[in-house]
Length: 133
Image (cartoon, rainbow, N blue to C red; front, side, top):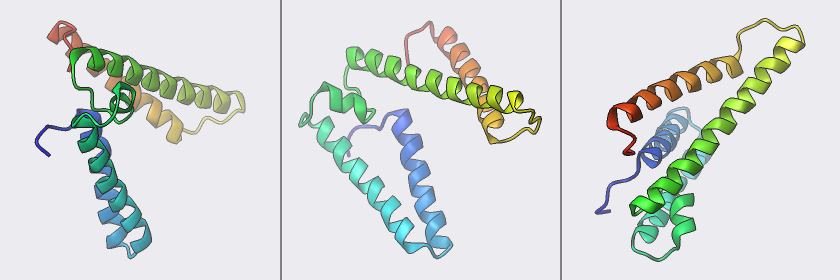
């Protein structure tokens, strides 16, 4: 592929590839093949989208915007995903607190991690003057 992958795709494809390696290392070959196939399939779809075989919506869905207009739409869509994830984890935290559970479990750690990433991302954007990634 001659073009560079978007940051979200780098992260997601790396996690899938590492998951495939992890599954193979633990003898779970079926999962390893499925995850490896997902990486190859995603790369093929990204390549086709980059060559203009798909429309704007597909490029946004796979996280590979081509121009500034698509990049702005992609960032806004990704922001909605992040805010939804934070809202879901906040809901889980409030549910657990309401049920009387004071244990610090997975949902709380995810919420803390997402808020830290959000704060860091905001600072990076302010330093860049809001010009985008």
